[in-house]
Image (cartoon, rainbow, N blue to C red; front, side, top):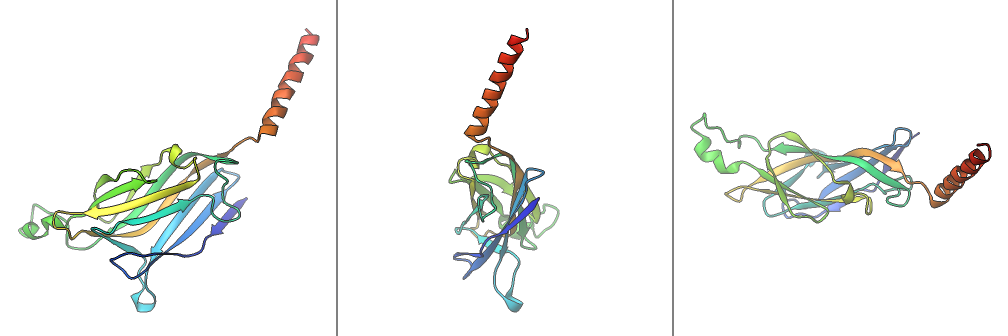
Length: 204
């Protein structure tokens, strides 16, 4: 059985834009034991609508993936535990600012390259490299999810001129989970094994 949870639209306040919205969609497949939690970023309306949020230098973007969201979300760590997870970011670079040694104009656009830094669950920001329009993926440590089912994400962008900006289309957290046996079930299982052992010994 597949379950789909749509959370409310949240608002992010940033210095670069008046308001940016994010819509989080969690899809849990109980049969396969998988989950996909997607946050889509957008801003504006009408002809001003954009299907991304812009992150500028000096204005980090912070948000969270919540695997427990909604009435049918996972229950971590009480009933479920994540067994593997991957975070995927869809980044969009501004045009005409890629550094290219083969052109004369590289002297003018050298410092406009974007270097993206990523922090998870309040951890230290780590540079993930120069980013163009591309998908970036990284494996998530299970300890970051199995404490409370929430993954905090912090994204920053920098360059030498202080003019870096990059667009984020979506953030997707996907992976697999397992059901945690309840204590009663474990006890019944142990009692069953014990009874079977006694029965076998009687017939030995």
